[in-house]
Length: 129
Image 1 (cartoon, rainbow, N blue to C red):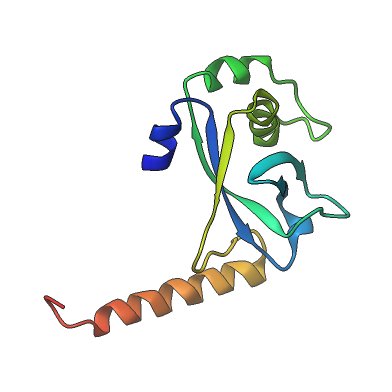
Image 2 (image 1 turned 90 degrees about the vertical axis):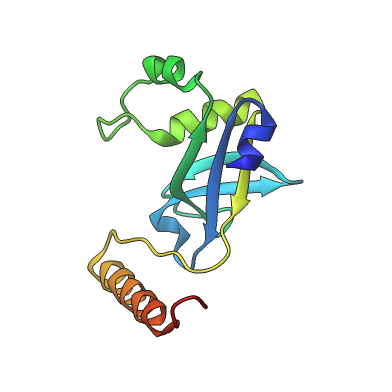
């Protein structure tokens, strides 16, 4: 959040390396900049998934008003993100540590297992430690 506030304007997305990028919006990165995001690409240009954490300046409300429904009949957050990329005001961070999607039965099970393990680990920490 502090880095986003310091950038002053634009947008910031959080990315995570994944083993199955074709299931996600995938960011192409070069020279510390996001070049573009493609939703569920058949041939991903990276393994960096856009994980659904977005920070936007107030211009996002004007951008949303210009969106047209996709072939799926939906307004796409990827279109918003690509607007900020074209504007030159998109930044990103790559998340360290664990993250998982919960969009399939397998990933939902993994997510619940990770949360359960994290909770169990918290229970083992002595008070005041």
